Amino acid sequence: MAEGAKVLVLFKAEGGAPCLDGNPTKQLKFDPLKPFSAVVDYLKRKLKSQLESEQLFVYVHKFCPSLDEELGVIFEAYKDEMHSGKFCLTVSYAPMLMYG
Picture 1 (cartoon, rainbow, N blue to C red):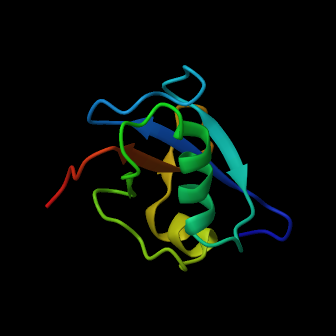
Picture 2: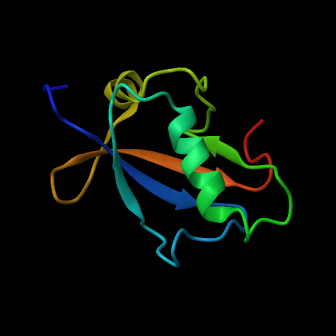
C-alpha cells in the first residue's frame, strides 16, 4: 500500500445481524497498520445495544482472521474490486457462527 493510504472496509451484515447505522453497505477507512481487532472493536461498539448477546463473529471471505493481523496485510491478500474501480476489504459479521 502507498504511504498514507487507508484500508476501505465495506461492512456486510449476515445471519440477522443489524446493519450499521441502518446502512447495508456501510464503509469506513482504517489505518493499514491497525490490527484486525480494531474492526471487531468498532463493530462491537456500534452494535452493542442491538445485539442480543455479546457474541459477534467477523469474517473476511468466510474465515476469521487473527485479531492481531494487520489490516493492510489482510487487505492485500483479500481485497475486492468495487463497481467504482476502487478496492475494499469486505467484512461480514453475524451474531452466530455462519461458516464451519
